[in-house]
Length: 190
Image 1 (cartoon, rainbow, N blue to C red):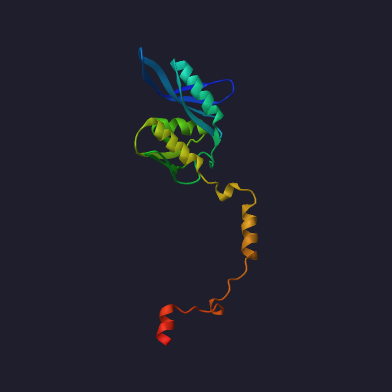
Image 2 (cartoon, one colour):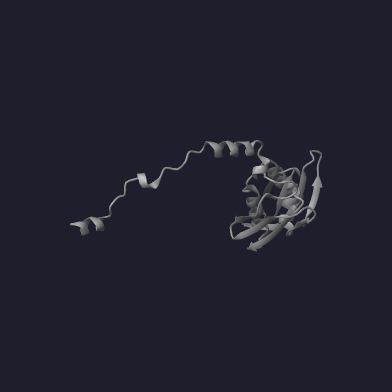
């Protein structure tokens, strides 16, 4: 279930999962709906949230509003990610690998929604462990959040590295450090 809605604020909103849940009360069962939504700006910011409501529309609106509040920035390199990483949430693991331009998004539905909303267009993924939709989505988000910035993207990093290498002092010689005698060698000398 991948419903895409664009609002006036130019955010990409995707509903990943809708499920009907019930609560047993004194008079019987009270039905409600849960919605798992992904919101992204298509330029490196993405958020995920799950909320409940009495109606599907209410649940989706609440979830997308909360996902918009919880948006985080991810590090990406062009149209892909800088390096391979594995995201973990509960018993779900998602392996995320960078891909060459033109590869596209090779991912399951929950991971695809998250990756498209964040603005990544070339990536290879593999879901490992539990296939629970919510856990897979949060595992993919964990992997994307923990991406490190490559050295190429930091301005002035090359100059800083060359300065550090030229200023490092030579390591002291090991022969100048006195040796400690072990207890066994001390006992043998007596």
